[in-house]
Length: 499
Ligand code: AHR
Image (tube, rainbow, N blue to C red; front, side, top):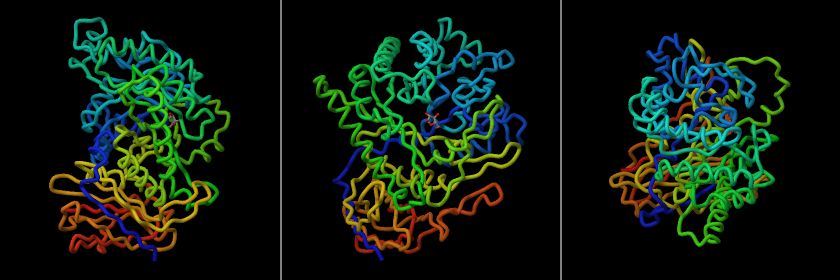
């Protein structure tokens, strides 16, 4: 049985737990919006056409900021199409996903939906195929109180109060050849800098996100960040990271170690950003907006893509059904984001409903939780106060993809009267026995201990069996004399709340 020992001490603090770490992402893609969160005529729909069963699940998920409206979609999007009287909104082709966009949900409706879910809006502007002026127009429409052409238009459209959107993304994945209007780092850096400078002339307190690489595997990774930040450093606040993982070639061991790659990605981007900052003799720090991360069966998606000729509205796309192993990886990735809260100050699970999402729906039917829903929602509920850097003594195993990886990984948070520990066991066959020295946290009892595991690591929740995989109480968790002991089943994710 693998044995690990962890020491936690409230003197080893990383940074505050940032609510924005628990962000997510809604793109006009597949059935994320249409028949996902919006379905007029559904038995649970409100007067706006929003499914209240989905709203309840989003609230339970505990997602904070929601990035919108894309994604690749944003690079062909005219925001003006999606405001005003619905019957006058044009239907357009979305080249990114080869689908029709009806524009029946736009900024104003989406902002109303966000209020129902208690979330913050993070808006992306199209810098790929549009220019500075449309971005400024959108900013005026969204945030200016009143008395200008576009703020008055918003009011006339039924939204008297400004949306007051703080976080804005300057395009999406501009390094990717799949992106409509993709650019070189130099071209993008210049356009992003000018767009950002103009937006900050309107409101100097905006928080702007410049596009980093769409993955650490991109051939331009590193150089892209350096070049883009050399142009934009003084004007932006965040650089984005995107990362998707999946089990490849039946190598579950490597897949379970995906978080080590995320760590490497964060290290590299932080080092590059700080290098540019140092060259500029700037005291400012650029933080990371990890605004797309998840498990995604991307390889299968690429292989199944045929030359689509038909233009359909809200087709079923990217509706991955997640396993227990996927949920363990998602839980571990979220632990990594938390552990890096010193520099990762915003993140978005991609995406929220139906499209590579923790929540699934059927048109006219139910909404349910995927396996990945659970670690996200439990972490969002339990993590509070400050992130604690754990000292982990764990056996290691060799992975084909990422080299050596620890069998047990962990992170903890501590608040005034509570603490929480999050753990994974990556061992494929054996339970891990873990002892955790919590004397430095001042905790005296276990309030709650939940584990997600299953003898079948590929078990899933489906329409026909929506609760096949749910977290169970871990009764092995005991705290005595300042030492917490717990047994972690093979391929499992665990959260322990302490008082
Ligand atoms: O989240 C799905 C897609 O993945 C997004 O549209 C794009 O930004 C990324 O490639």
